[in-house]
Amino acid sequence: MAKSRFDEAAAKIGAAVGRADRTARKLKKAGVVAKKELEQISKEVESLKRRLQKSAQRLKRAMA
Image (cartoon, rainbow, N blue to C red):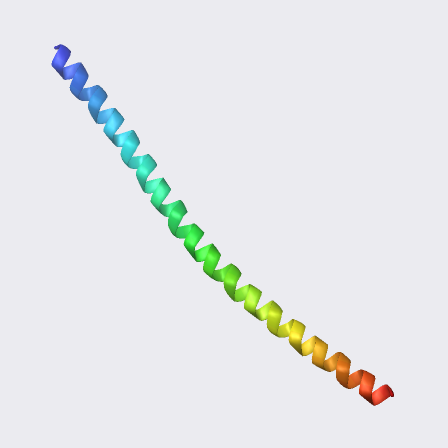
């Protein structure tokens, strides 16, 4: 009877560890995706910044 309880406890512990591992993997994958999206957004912001600077220079020349 004691072995049965130990087996049940081990199964519950194993299931909990499996769920935790699965969740950790999902979070890691989501973090990688978020990092890539952030890099892409940063590149777009830099591009827009350059365009704005060029437009400002053109405007200054046109007003001068």
